[in-house]
Amino acid sequence: MTDSVLMLEPDGSQLRLVVSKQMENSCQSLQRTDIESLLEQSDYYAYSRLEEAIQDAIDYYNNSKSDAGQSAFIIAERKDVELEISISDDCMFAYVTLTGAYGGDRLTAQGLIVTLKQQRILRGVSKKRLQYLLQKSWELDPGETFTLKIAAGRPAVAGTDTRFEPLVADASQRILAPQDSDHGKVDMRDLGKLITVEIGQPLMRRIPPTAGEPGYDIHGNVVEAIAGKVIAFDVGLGTRISDSDHNVLIADKEGTPRHGLTGMAVDDLLTVDSVDVTTGHIDFNGAVLVLGDVSSGMKVKAGGNITVTGVVELAELTAGGNITIANGVIGRLQDGKPAYCHLQALGKVSAKFAQYTQIESGTDTELHLHLAHCMVKAKGVVRVIDPAQRHGTVTGGVIVAEGGVSARVLGAEAGIDTQIKLLSQFDDLKADMDALKAEIKNQEERLHQIVLLQMKLSKIPKEKRSQELANKVTDSKGQFMATLAEMKSQHQSLQQSYLQQFSAAQVEVSSLIYPGVSVRIADKEFVAEREMTACRIHLEKQKIVCQPLSTTRSQV
Image 1 (cartoon, one colour):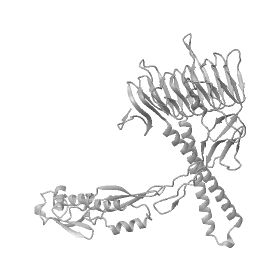
Image 2 (cartoon, helix red, strand yellow):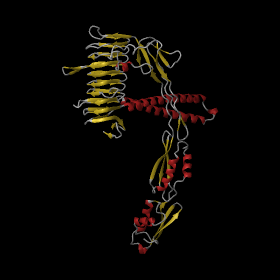
Image 3 (cartoon, helix red, strand yellow):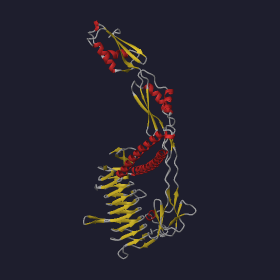
Image 4 (cartoon, helix red, strand yellow):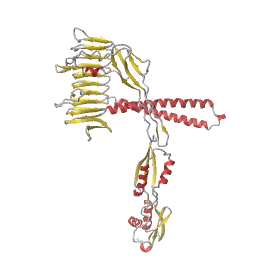
């Protein structure tokens, strides 16, 4: 095509194509490549094409019925770089999306700053990112997009809840590591001084909550911190709050201390040499110390802690506090079926080893040597490892733990079925969170309607306005806001509990995992099909991840 047929004429930001149709050239058709070639050789090659107009120009020229003459078509236009700002729902982040210029102006610092001010993006802006954005606007091809986060608010730091610090040792730690006698031999009976307290002795210190630190969003609005929860002492039997320091819990009588999460109790102490047919079953509303063994078929029930310095064999122990067994817990197979020992504690269960035992603990379960063919349900962590990390094997059985599992070895070379289940309450907790979130949304919508009604009433002249209705609307608004605040606080507590459970839901093995071990976290399951070395198993992005205790990681 010659210049006499096609001619480009700029018209402001638009580009006009003048098509001249002559009768002697009517046999030569116009192609899309002809127009594109003309544009490529011009100063307007970067303009944004208007495809429909180009097609109209081609159709006009190639239409045999049209007479000779000229017609103009707007086939392209110049566009400056486009800038779009998006802000997160919580106003904590701002993103800029650039679309490359079509022959137009690039981004300027002044234009960018003006746009940010128009969007009220006042805090958390990164100067380095803005400079990079300006540079990038010159590198983009026409129509190419690029998105960059350019501002970030600072989230508020929530205050810590009230914390509680025990001031007396946990008896289970002492029992599992008894002191030597003067003759160099271990004296399992020398436990009295280690687990008793005197009147007035400090038992636990309460550390007040913190207020947290406020943050800000990108608009400069203050994001208020949520203060930590104030938690009162659980003043148990035989304790009281100190007169001189209301953050200290002291003993109000002599006895053996029983640890709790937010308080302590001092129990009377019943000491027996052993529990067998000669003593009968024991049911004591205090702490029980057995300086020997608990024989087969016997039952020990205590309102406080149960401490056994010997072995528990095919017996049943129930404690309102902790259960601590210095040696082991032994059940066995009878006629090919498990005959279990039963341990149930509102607190912690500790022992050197356990086999064929049903264990239910209100907090942690700790074994130093091995856990074999046991059924364990713990609201805390299940640890099967000694302090030196030389022993600790879980073989067979089922462990259900809310706080995760830690062991040196899981399974056995024979491929014995060993099951671990975590986040068993996950679905219920998530359902509660989702239900509460839906209620919050509904409450917010109702509050919005009340605000709209209040605004509508404010536009009515005062003399024509119903004061009774106005007062009713104001009261309703206050009630809805109070309810909404309470619901959001509940949702945050559930979310915090969810995050805590989620982070705790992991299995850590410091030595080996054998085939036959299965780990179920919520609705996802990992099955060891080969021998594996030290690793951590947890849930990440809806997948179970087996992460070696080195730097590499693989997904299962």
